[in-house]
Length: 491
Image 1 (cartoon, helix red, strand yellow):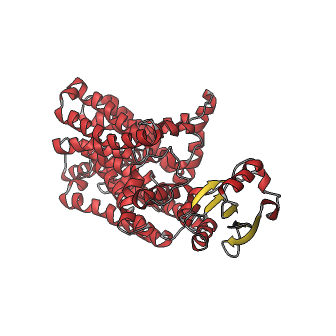
Image 2 (spheres, one colour):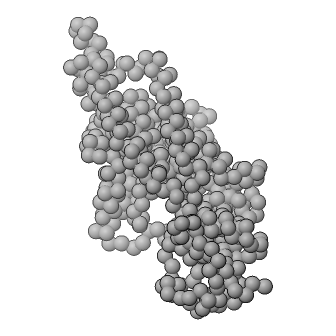
Image 3 (cartoon, one colour):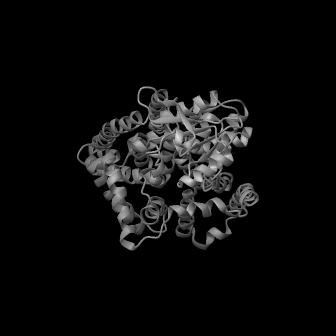
């Protein structure tokens, strides 16, 4: 083989990336670029109104730390996210500090996608996959929201990374971290299932003799104890929230379940384009071949874990959960992008046989094309949602300034108004008779009607004075979307 042929072959095999300089530099590129993009959008979104589910996590955090009202918190939500945020309120910080702190799991998720991908599909494929995940709108948009999607992905990646290092100390810590991911967002349990199957594939019964696995499992059980005890004391069952979350899984026939695949496909395709979808299909096929061909070896087992990690949550949400919401499948995105990275690198290897630098060109072309596709899409969504629910934010703040701590607010947006007003809230009932009874018994100071949530039919054509109310304010100024009504007979 000539020197030129040897150089071409080395380049095609990714030897350029094996150089110590690249190994040290590119992870920092991921971190710095991801952080810069997220800091840019944090500057834009740091004061945006919270959504109803964001408000639920925040009011529970403030309740844990300060005993503030938490009316509107749904009992099916796991607690760890709110517990973690409670520390900020306990030391006198608030929403802005929480938003800044959430940059840590946001950037860590990108970095850890690379580190996990490096072990499972190779450094080059891991880099491409991590870059794509960091630029995709789901990763970017939900990094700007106080929601569990990105933090639970970061915890899953961290736990998986600790496990894959196969050092005793890190393996012992892996399951406790994954358990915290589950108590951040319950579907993280699929990561535990994927790793369990991976252990069976790669180690068989020998896994049962690994002392560090048993130690890790024991610590994982210990981590669940405080959550189970709290659930039992508060609700009479250690898994109450898990059971309550079952409302998202309605009874469906087979065809309706299969329609979920199409629904998620229609949601995701515009954000990635046909080129990346083709690379995803190619990557899944290549990983499947690798998993079968190298079964029992590190290469095949790593491919199997990527496929399990992607397919398990995807099938669960497509077949069992409704409605089909894009963010539900975010846990499947890192392995999906790793599959795309793997296919890209394999194509680059073929191109490298023609010219030594072609493998790098292929990688950069895919990453560049994806960035040009992803960022404008994410930008439109982030900017388009900056003012959503601003009427409720302004109404809640006005109520806080014009009420006492014991006053009650009726609305159909209880969590958000509880968060901004720091007053207890109740839901406007569907039946007019129940509303009249609530007005007499609870004597709410304010009632808020808005365009943000569905309201009972009877509220649409009724006069305020017929309800014993008067219109006192409307928000936001200039385009009223939330109206505050005050009870006429205030003691």
